[in-house]
Length: 354
Image (cartoon, rainbow, N blue to C red; front, side):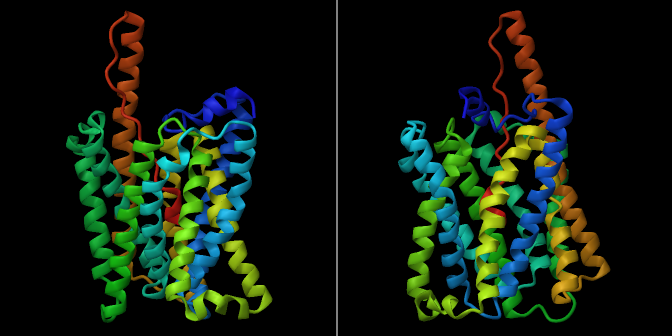
Protein backbone atom coordinates (compact mmCIF):
# COMPACT_ATOMS: atom_id res chain seq x y z
CA UNK A 1 0.00 0.00 0.00
CA UNK A 2 1.39 3.46 -0.86
CA UNK A 3 2.51 5.57 2.02
CA UNK A 4 -0.23 8.12 1.27
CA UNK A 5 -2.84 5.41 1.74
CA UNK A 6 -1.44 4.47 5.15
CA UNK A 7 -1.39 8.09 6.27
CA UNK A 8 -4.98 8.47 5.15
CA UNK A 9 -5.99 5.41 7.18
CA UNK A 10 -4.43 6.95 10.28
CA UNK A 11 -6.72 9.92 9.98
CA UNK A 12 -9.85 7.82 10.23
CA UNK A 13 -11.15 9.81 13.20
CA UNK A 14 -11.57 12.93 11.08
CA UNK A 15 -15.16 13.91 10.37
CA UNK A 16 -14.57 14.93 6.75
CA UNK A 17 -14.35 12.24 4.06
CA UNK A 18 -11.06 11.65 2.34
CA UNK A 19 -10.50 13.39 -0.99
CA UNK A 20 -10.99 10.85 -3.74
CA UNK A 21 -12.68 11.07 -7.14
CA UNK A 22 -15.97 12.81 -6.22
CA UNK A 23 -18.39 10.53 -8.07
CA UNK A 24 -16.61 7.21 -7.59
CA UNK A 25 -15.70 8.01 -3.97
CA UNK A 26 -19.29 8.78 -2.97
CA UNK A 27 -20.67 5.81 -4.89
CA UNK A 28 -18.18 3.47 -3.21
CA UNK A 29 -18.96 5.08 0.14
CA UNK A 30 -22.70 4.49 -0.29
CA UNK A 31 -22.09 0.89 -1.33
CA UNK A 32 -19.78 0.15 1.60
CA UNK A 33 -22.01 1.72 4.26
CA UNK A 34 -25.06 -0.16 2.92
CA UNK A 35 -23.08 -3.40 2.99
CA UNK A 36 -21.96 -2.57 6.54
CA UNK A 37 -25.55 -2.02 7.66
CA UNK A 38 -26.73 -5.23 6.00
CA UNK A 39 -23.84 -7.24 7.44
CA UNK A 40 -24.27 -5.96 10.98
CA UNK A 41 -28.03 -6.40 10.71
CA UNK A 42 -27.48 -10.11 10.04
CA UNK A 43 -25.38 -10.83 13.14
CA UNK A 44 -28.07 -10.74 15.89
CA UNK A 45 -30.24 -12.78 13.52
CA UNK A 46 -27.50 -15.37 13.00
CA UNK A 47 -26.94 -15.63 16.76
CA UNK A 48 -30.66 -16.11 17.40
CA UNK A 49 -30.74 -18.80 14.72
CA UNK A 50 -27.81 -20.68 16.28
CA UNK A 51 -29.41 -20.54 19.74
CA UNK A 52 -31.50 -23.60 18.91
CA UNK A 53 -28.43 -25.75 18.20
CA UNK A 54 -25.37 -24.56 20.13
CA UNK A 55 -24.73 -22.66 23.35
CA UNK A 56 -23.52 -19.04 23.25
CA UNK A 57 -20.01 -19.85 24.48
CA UNK A 58 -19.54 -22.29 21.61
CA UNK A 59 -20.93 -19.79 19.08
CA UNK A 60 -18.64 -17.04 20.38
CA UNK A 61 -15.56 -19.24 20.46
CA UNK A 62 -15.91 -20.62 16.97
CA UNK A 63 -17.00 -17.37 15.35
CA UNK A 64 -14.19 -15.27 16.79
CA UNK A 65 -11.63 -17.96 15.97
CA UNK A 66 -12.68 -17.68 12.33
CA UNK A 67 -12.41 -13.90 12.70
CA UNK A 68 -8.87 -14.10 14.04
CA UNK A 69 -7.87 -16.32 11.12
CA UNK A 70 -9.42 -13.82 8.69
CA UNK A 71 -7.44 -10.91 10.14
CA UNK A 72 -4.15 -12.72 10.78
CA UNK A 73 -2.84 -12.39 7.18
CA UNK A 74 -3.10 -8.60 7.47
CA UNK A 75 -0.84 -8.68 10.54
CA UNK A 76 1.63 -11.04 8.87
CA UNK A 77 1.66 -8.88 5.73
CA UNK A 78 2.33 -5.72 7.75
CA UNK A 79 5.01 -7.40 9.88
CA UNK A 80 6.91 -8.77 6.88
CA UNK A 81 6.97 -5.32 5.31
CA UNK A 82 7.93 -3.51 8.48
CA UNK A 83 4.57 -1.71 8.67
CA UNK A 84 3.22 -3.26 11.84
CA UNK A 85 2.70 -0.38 14.30
CA UNK A 86 5.31 -0.31 17.04
CA UNK A 87 3.92 -1.48 20.39
CA UNK A 88 0.63 -2.62 18.85
CA UNK A 89 0.47 -5.85 20.88
CA UNK A 90 0.93 -4.10 24.20
CA UNK A 91 -1.44 -1.30 23.28
CA UNK A 92 -4.13 -3.81 22.23
CA UNK A 93 -4.31 -5.54 25.63
CA UNK A 94 -6.77 -3.19 27.36
CA UNK A 95 -9.02 -2.71 24.30
CA UNK A 96 -9.08 -6.49 23.86
CA UNK A 97 -10.22 -6.94 27.46
CA UNK A 98 -13.23 -4.67 26.93
CA UNK A 99 -13.91 -6.13 23.49
CA UNK A 100 -13.92 -9.64 24.99
CA UNK A 101 -16.40 -8.64 27.69
CA UNK A 102 -18.62 -6.93 25.15
CA UNK A 103 -18.56 -9.85 22.73
CA UNK A 104 -19.17 -12.34 25.55
CA UNK A 105 -22.31 -10.55 26.69
CA UNK A 106 -23.39 -9.68 23.15
CA UNK A 107 -23.23 -13.37 22.22
CA UNK A 108 -25.35 -14.47 25.19
CA UNK A 109 -28.05 -11.79 24.87
CA UNK A 110 -29.91 -13.32 21.85
CA UNK A 111 -30.42 -16.48 23.92
CA UNK A 112 -32.42 -14.39 26.41
CA UNK A 113 -34.10 -11.71 24.30
CA UNK A 114 -35.35 -11.24 20.74
CA UNK A 115 -32.93 -9.59 18.27
CA UNK A 116 -34.95 -6.42 17.65
CA UNK A 117 -35.40 -5.59 21.32
CA UNK A 118 -31.75 -6.43 21.93
CA UNK A 119 -30.46 -3.98 19.32
CA UNK A 120 -32.73 -1.20 20.53
CA UNK A 121 -31.32 -1.72 24.05
CA UNK A 122 -27.78 -1.54 22.63
CA UNK A 123 -28.40 2.05 21.45
CA UNK A 124 -27.45 3.31 24.90
CA UNK A 125 -23.82 2.62 23.98
CA UNK A 126 -23.65 5.99 22.22
CA UNK A 127 -24.29 7.65 25.59
CA UNK A 128 -21.46 5.69 27.24
CA UNK A 129 -19.10 6.61 24.39
CA UNK A 130 -19.85 10.32 24.53
CA UNK A 131 -19.77 10.59 28.33
CA UNK A 132 -16.57 8.55 28.47
CA UNK A 133 -14.97 10.75 25.82
CA UNK A 134 -15.92 13.83 27.82
CA UNK A 135 -14.28 12.38 30.92
CA UNK A 136 -11.10 11.22 29.19
CA UNK A 137 -10.56 13.95 26.61
CA UNK A 138 -10.68 17.56 27.76
CA UNK A 139 -11.43 18.84 24.25
CA UNK A 140 -14.76 16.99 24.21
CA UNK A 141 -16.17 18.11 27.53
CA UNK A 142 -18.04 21.02 26.01
CA UNK A 143 -20.29 18.77 23.91
CA UNK A 144 -21.94 17.19 26.94
CA UNK A 145 -23.18 20.63 28.03
CA UNK A 146 -24.83 21.55 24.72
CA UNK A 147 -28.65 21.59 24.49
CA UNK A 148 -28.56 19.25 21.47
CA UNK A 149 -26.55 16.62 23.34
CA UNK A 150 -28.79 16.82 26.41
CA UNK A 151 -31.89 16.50 24.20
CA UNK A 152 -30.36 13.51 22.40
CA UNK A 153 -29.43 11.92 25.72
CA UNK A 154 -33.00 12.28 26.98
CA UNK A 155 -34.35 10.78 23.74
CA UNK A 156 -32.01 7.78 23.90
CA UNK A 157 -32.64 7.01 27.55
CA UNK A 158 -36.38 7.69 27.42
CA UNK A 159 -36.91 5.88 24.13
CA UNK A 160 -34.90 2.83 25.19
CA UNK A 161 -36.68 2.60 28.54
CA UNK A 162 -40.12 2.85 26.94
CA UNK A 163 -39.22 0.29 24.26
CA UNK A 164 -38.42 -2.19 27.00
CA UNK A 165 -41.30 -1.34 29.34
CA UNK A 166 -43.91 -1.46 26.58
CA UNK A 167 -43.01 -5.05 25.71
CA UNK A 168 -46.26 -7.05 25.30
CA UNK A 169 -46.77 -9.78 27.88
CA UNK A 170 -44.77 -10.51 30.98
CA UNK A 171 -41.35 -8.92 31.44
CA UNK A 172 -39.82 -12.19 32.61
CA UNK A 173 -36.48 -13.13 34.11
CA UNK A 174 -34.96 -14.07 30.74
CA UNK A 175 -35.97 -10.74 29.23
CA UNK A 176 -34.50 -8.83 32.18
CA UNK A 177 -31.26 -10.76 31.82
CA UNK A 178 -31.22 -10.08 28.08
CA UNK A 179 -31.68 -6.35 28.63
CA UNK A 180 -28.89 -6.23 31.21
CA UNK A 181 -26.59 -8.23 28.93
CA UNK A 182 -27.34 -5.86 26.03
CA UNK A 183 -26.64 -2.78 28.12
CA UNK A 184 -23.50 -4.37 29.56
CA UNK A 185 -22.30 -5.19 26.05
CA UNK A 186 -22.95 -1.61 24.97
CA UNK A 187 -21.00 -0.22 27.92
CA UNK A 188 -18.10 -2.61 27.26
CA UNK A 189 -17.96 -1.69 23.60
CA UNK A 190 -17.94 1.96 24.55
CA UNK A 191 -14.98 1.32 26.85
CA UNK A 192 -13.34 -0.58 24.00
CA UNK A 193 -13.74 2.33 21.59
CA UNK A 194 -12.42 4.83 24.11
CA UNK A 195 -9.42 2.67 25.04
CA UNK A 196 -8.56 2.22 21.36
CA UNK A 197 -8.60 5.98 20.94
CA UNK A 198 -6.55 6.52 24.09
CA UNK A 199 -3.96 3.76 23.66
CA UNK A 200 -3.80 3.05 19.93
CA UNK A 201 -3.89 6.58 18.51
CA UNK A 202 -2.02 6.95 15.22
CA UNK A 203 -2.14 3.24 14.41
CA UNK A 204 -3.75 1.91 11.24
CA UNK A 205 -7.29 1.06 12.45
CA UNK A 206 -7.54 -2.16 10.46
CA UNK A 207 -4.26 -3.46 11.91
CA UNK A 208 -5.25 -2.27 15.39
CA UNK A 209 -8.51 -4.21 15.21
CA UNK A 210 -6.71 -7.22 13.75
CA UNK A 211 -4.44 -7.30 16.82
CA UNK A 212 -7.38 -6.88 19.18
CA UNK A 213 -9.24 -9.71 17.44
CA UNK A 214 -6.37 -12.15 18.08
CA UNK A 215 -6.49 -11.54 21.84
CA UNK A 216 -10.30 -11.65 21.83
CA UNK A 217 -10.37 -14.98 19.99
CA UNK A 218 -7.95 -16.58 22.48
CA UNK A 219 -10.00 -15.34 25.44
CA UNK A 220 -13.31 -16.53 23.98
CA UNK A 221 -11.79 -19.90 23.11
CA UNK A 222 -10.75 -20.34 26.76
CA UNK A 223 -14.30 -19.47 27.86
CA UNK A 224 -15.67 -21.97 25.33
CA UNK A 225 -13.41 -24.76 26.59
CA UNK A 226 -14.51 -24.08 30.18
CA UNK A 227 -18.23 -23.31 29.80
CA UNK A 228 -19.22 -24.61 26.38
CA UNK A 229 -21.09 -27.88 26.03
CA UNK A 230 -18.60 -30.65 25.20
CA UNK A 231 -15.96 -27.90 25.42
CA UNK A 232 -17.26 -26.44 22.17
CA UNK A 233 -17.11 -29.70 20.22
CA UNK A 234 -20.89 -29.73 19.72
CA UNK A 235 -20.40 -27.32 16.79
CA UNK A 236 -18.75 -30.18 14.93
CA UNK A 237 -22.04 -32.08 15.04
CA UNK A 238 -23.96 -29.36 13.20
CA UNK A 239 -25.20 -30.20 9.71
CA UNK A 240 -22.76 -29.04 7.06
CA UNK A 241 -24.93 -26.15 5.91
CA UNK A 242 -25.38 -24.85 9.47
CA UNK A 243 -21.65 -25.05 10.15
CA UNK A 244 -21.16 -23.15 6.90
CA UNK A 245 -23.53 -20.44 8.17
CA UNK A 246 -21.51 -20.26 11.39
CA UNK A 247 -18.37 -19.58 9.35
CA UNK A 248 -20.25 -17.17 7.08
CA UNK A 249 -21.54 -15.16 10.05
CA UNK A 250 -18.00 -14.44 11.21
CA UNK A 251 -16.90 -13.50 7.69
CA UNK A 252 -19.84 -11.14 7.22
CA UNK A 253 -19.89 -9.52 10.65
CA UNK A 254 -16.30 -9.56 11.87
CA UNK A 255 -14.43 -9.69 8.57
CA UNK A 256 -16.25 -7.91 5.77
CA UNK A 257 -18.35 -5.74 8.08
CA UNK A 258 -15.40 -3.96 9.63
CA UNK A 259 -13.58 -3.57 6.31
CA UNK A 260 -16.64 -2.02 4.68
CA UNK A 261 -17.15 0.23 7.71
CA UNK A 262 -13.63 1.67 7.60
CA UNK A 263 -13.90 2.18 3.83
CA UNK A 264 -17.23 3.97 4.31
CA UNK A 265 -15.67 6.33 6.86
CA UNK A 266 -12.90 7.19 4.39
CA UNK A 267 -15.36 8.03 1.61
CA UNK A 268 -18.31 9.51 3.50
CA UNK A 269 -16.81 10.71 6.79
CA UNK A 270 -17.39 9.45 10.31
CA UNK A 271 -20.54 11.47 11.00
CA UNK A 272 -22.40 10.16 7.94
CA UNK A 273 -21.25 6.57 8.44
CA UNK A 274 -22.24 6.65 12.12
CA UNK A 275 -25.63 8.08 11.27
CA UNK A 276 -26.46 5.31 8.80
CA UNK A 277 -25.48 2.44 11.10
CA UNK A 278 -27.80 3.84 13.77
CA UNK A 279 -30.58 2.32 11.66
CA UNK A 280 -29.46 -1.17 12.71
CA UNK A 281 -32.23 -1.68 15.32
CA UNK A 282 -34.85 -0.85 12.69
CA UNK A 283 -33.47 -3.23 10.07
CA UNK A 284 -32.93 -6.00 12.65
CA UNK A 285 -36.49 -5.64 13.97
CA UNK A 286 -38.01 -5.79 10.48
CA UNK A 287 -35.98 -8.89 9.58
CA UNK A 288 -36.73 -10.51 12.96
CA UNK A 289 -40.45 -10.06 12.33
CA UNK A 290 -40.26 -12.26 9.25
CA UNK A 291 -37.66 -14.73 10.53
CA UNK A 292 -38.67 -15.20 14.17
CA UNK A 293 -42.12 -13.59 14.34
CA UNK A 294 -40.82 -10.97 16.78
CA UNK A 295 -43.58 -8.39 17.00
CA UNK A 296 -43.04 -4.97 18.50
CA UNK A 297 -46.09 -2.95 19.46
CA UNK A 298 -46.82 0.44 17.93
CA UNK A 299 -45.69 2.08 21.16
CA UNK A 300 -42.42 0.15 21.10
CA UNK A 301 -41.75 1.19 17.51
CA UNK A 302 -42.39 4.84 18.35
CA UNK A 303 -40.18 4.69 21.46
CA UNK A 304 -37.47 2.75 19.65
CA UNK A 305 -37.35 5.19 16.76
CA UNK A 306 -37.11 8.03 19.29
CA UNK A 307 -34.06 6.31 20.82
CA UNK A 308 -32.47 5.90 17.39
CA UNK A 309 -33.18 9.53 16.55
CA UNK A 310 -31.68 10.56 19.89
CA UNK A 311 -28.48 8.70 19.05
CA UNK A 312 -28.39 10.60 15.78
CA UNK A 313 -28.87 13.91 17.60
CA UNK A 314 -25.95 13.10 19.92
CA UNK A 315 -23.71 12.29 16.95
CA UNK A 316 -24.89 15.43 15.15
CA UNK A 317 -24.15 17.62 18.19
CA UNK A 318 -20.68 16.13 18.45
CA UNK A 319 -20.03 16.50 14.73
CA UNK A 320 -21.29 20.08 14.69
CA UNK A 321 -19.00 21.14 17.52
CA UNK A 322 -16.09 19.30 15.95
CA UNK A 323 -16.67 21.04 12.61
CA UNK A 324 -16.86 24.44 14.33
CA UNK A 325 -13.57 23.80 16.11
CA UNK A 326 -11.98 22.68 12.84
CA UNK A 327 -13.03 25.94 11.19
CA UNK A 328 -11.58 27.93 14.09
CA UNK A 329 -8.36 25.93 13.86
CA UNK A 330 -8.01 26.71 10.15
CA UNK A 331 -8.70 30.39 10.76
CA UNK A 332 -6.15 30.45 13.60
CA UNK A 333 -3.50 28.81 11.43
CA UNK A 334 -4.09 31.35 8.68
CA UNK A 335 -3.79 34.16 11.23
CA UNK A 336 -0.68 32.60 12.76
CA UNK A 337 -2.32 32.02 16.16
CA UNK A 338 -2.34 28.79 18.19
CA UNK A 339 -5.45 26.79 17.19
CA UNK A 340 -7.94 25.52 19.78
CA UNK A 341 -8.16 21.77 20.40
CA UNK A 342 -10.37 20.01 17.87
CA UNK A 343 -12.90 17.45 19.00
CA UNK A 344 -12.27 14.11 17.30
CA UNK A 345 -15.20 11.75 17.43
CA UNK A 346 -14.69 8.26 18.77
CA UNK A 347 -16.24 5.87 16.30
CA UNK A 348 -18.64 3.18 17.53
CA UNK A 349 -16.75 0.00 18.30
CA UNK A 350 -16.73 -2.42 15.43
CA UNK A 351 -17.27 -5.40 17.72
CA UNK A 352 -20.70 -4.02 18.60
CA UNK A 353 -22.14 -5.70 15.53
CA UNK A 354 -19.91 -8.77 15.38
